Length: 125
Image 1 (cartoon, rainbow, N blue to C red):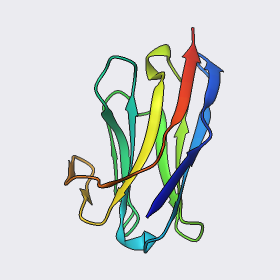
Image 2 (image 1 turned 180 degrees about the vertical axis):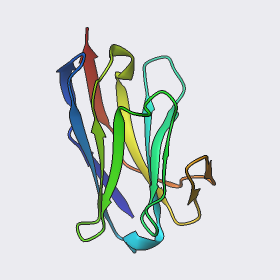
Image 3 (image 1 turned 90 degrees about the vertical axis):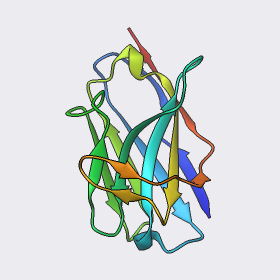
């Protein structure tokens, strides 16, 4: 299983970025894909998840209405469109995958066992 994130960078507050998570080495349709982030000195937090099987999505309250997760199963890629970015969104963003994770609108159940290397997102004020 390999996950490669891209699309991070430096953007001003109010701007947008689109992160990509390219997956390989597993049957993409059977997995849930999640985006997580970790800011310096803070614990890692879940941002958004999607079920590649049925398209169910989950968003953390902090990003609802601003971030959109989507999946292109033909390309084995999951995207995170981030709009109206705030300085507090600054973090290293990681994507993760797992076959046993269940995604619903209200919650994500299970643990992600496969992780990418991360991509830095910096939002300046």
